[in-house]
Image 1 (cartoon, rainbow, N blue to C red):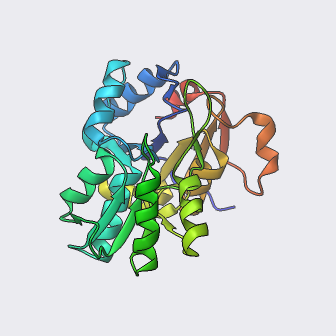
Image 2: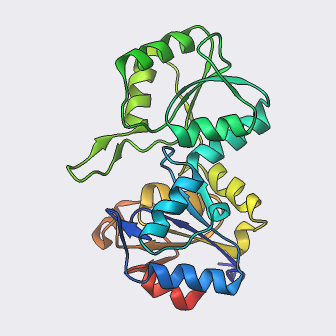
Length: 259
């Protein structure tokens, strides 16, 4: 195997890596502080499209993690960037919240339910049958189907919640049309993120807690990968996958000295 270049930029997932159920993971503050002090390019990533980068900055700041707005990259931002590149100045019917609608407005998209170019499905706290029915009819009438991320469930204090991937499956069953998922594990989200900070995959690393999204996305984007065991993947789960992370660490605390 060819020797990798030294790591000069970092991408890290948020939930399960830096925080868990609203509480910072021990060592996360030291890791972020060391990244900022080093001047190395970095991004905090999330597949959750509900919040804007400004919202997430405020949420992280409240738990003692000082991540600048420009260092936060969401599946909503990646979706808006993708659409602006592919079909600038378009229109869309959106099922989602402020993180997604704001990102689309910022790239000049018109949000409408009248003959939109796209139906865009994101995360929301209140999926409505009426909105899903409208999405089905618009897709059947020719709108192209985009989804921010393929996660089928999301965490809550009460247990798992249905998420974008599960709702996308319902719409697919009703239309026969598969969405294009922009978020992890699509390496597109990683590559557009790297481009925003002027970084290169061969000298970048991805930190995540999920083999099927974070590690797969990092692998397919050509990055060095670090799996941490503070989230959804346990050490015993790793061998179930046909690919492996470059490194396995107990937590983000073990990576402070890598920066």
